[in-house]
Length: 144
Image (tube, rainbow, N blue to C red; front, side, top):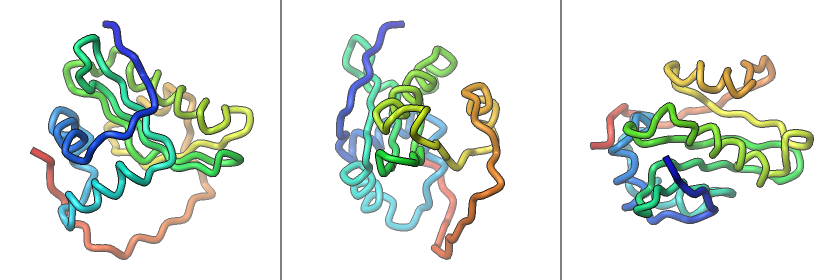
């Protein structure tokens, strides 16, 4: 399968349409979903998009970074029909490179239980030094 990866800002509508074709859409809360997706796609530090030869979005990877020490992967998804073909791995490697490279940048993410094996294959481990604070409304739903 041939595809290209480039830095690109998706429109909220295009990202929502992409989420319907992935398992990533279940990570978002229902509260103010469209408003928050709009903010996400317009504000994330690095926005990578993988497109097939027909220019369709097949993968997305978003990261927030200081470009000096750390990178947090906020979103990584590949459409179901392209899963397991290396697109996700290529997106993460490109994201890490753009943030400053593996020799300079510590990379973190929050993962769905089902994605743990993928991230372990990338060499990521579970850190002991992470703290969290999330006192927000979070009604689970699936983007359909």
